[in-house]
Length: 593
Image 1 (cartoon, rainbow, N blue to C red):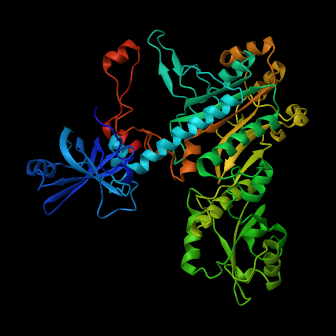
Image 2: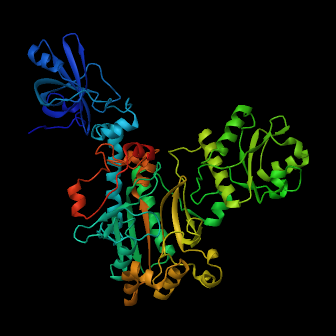
Image 3: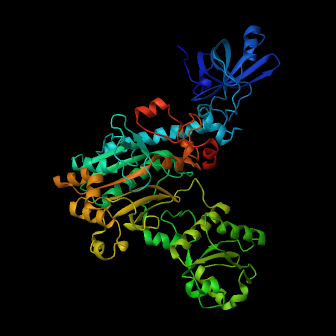
């Protein structure tokens, strides 16, 4: 056999036993007549000792071992003279008697250690080497553990795992689809699922009652740290339930995961309406690990002075930053430039320093009296030594979103977004529709199958923009980890939704006829939810990007730099698919990236 033990399991009680180990050379050191080699496998590190006095030829062979050589050794476990308390195996070493080089290695392009010298691009190109690093591997081990916990929890709740198709029909509503040409059906295309939404609803019509799937999903959209073109979600659907049933089960699932993975007891989660979240934090995924809640300052600052920007604004809001009245002019200028960046879009920033000595200093002092600043101080709950930052604009929601970005920036600067602290909540009562400037029409905030709040159904005919959805998001530390809704199961109400979204009956039937027809055969009331597995794992692991908990992720351009994908097809393949591809020049391709 290749090994009798792993490189992470030997302890002092194993001293005297003869073992066979196999793994990769982490590093080697020659000290006098002794050569020390750290051998690594998935389970840990073990120090090997080659003694020239015992076997000069064996020691000479050991001196030729390079980093990442794959080797097998046989030897005796011995107590170390100089123990290493930082290693689980630090009390022992192996006195090597036999060495077998299984395969040699080129010098790796970066060090295979926790604190590697490799940048993101080189590590993604050689991802198979990056995955040898314990810091990366532990993220995938966490992902595996969470997946097992999820499956066991849902199985105990009578959910059944069902796989749904990967090749489906395209549904242009929502994000862009990845499409797949069909050789057997020339000129026609499959789409890769953005989610198994309609399929899991059909399973409810089929009487499956409780379904789940660890589902691969695909969206052809711009990438960021928490988004990949392909991702995995914990997809669930239930029949004969209301919102309370769904929230209770999946709050219990979250509580189970936090306890088992992080040893944290989650309290009962608060619920916040979408309107309240936007008003207080400018976000439908507020980070509640710290304060700085928005304070509307229209009464205090509009029309009470001669500052034209505030007097013309439809919204003025501020945040109180504790203990930061000592910020320098340079620091305040940096914040002003931050909010003026295109990604934020504010035109400027107003600050008010409530100094420790009781004096007040503002960037717009000359426009307001001391009495006005006293009112601002009271409204914001500011104390001496605090700093108030204020934004304004002619669009309330847009300005709140800008203020939210500033709030999060200040949270980062002050170290208030502790990755080991978790504050979770439910956001409920989302708008059913949102206006699309691009489409110049109302679009479904989530998807066309979301149930309107029963109290708002009359508004579908008169003012659909005011209709609330029976929808909910699970938010943790400012991250939308999952979300779902009650579904429409009444055919006539579903037709009304399609009508408001601008679908003709013919188009609705062409795209969703399978679901419309299924609803004619006794569709049960049903609801569902999906957690983003990648986001959940990265949150638990304290990562800045979901890429670090995915085995083979794409880069920010959606490319797999290891496989060099996407790539061109051979002309023979294009001919079989009856596709004509107009290739852009190399320079234009580089320019687009």
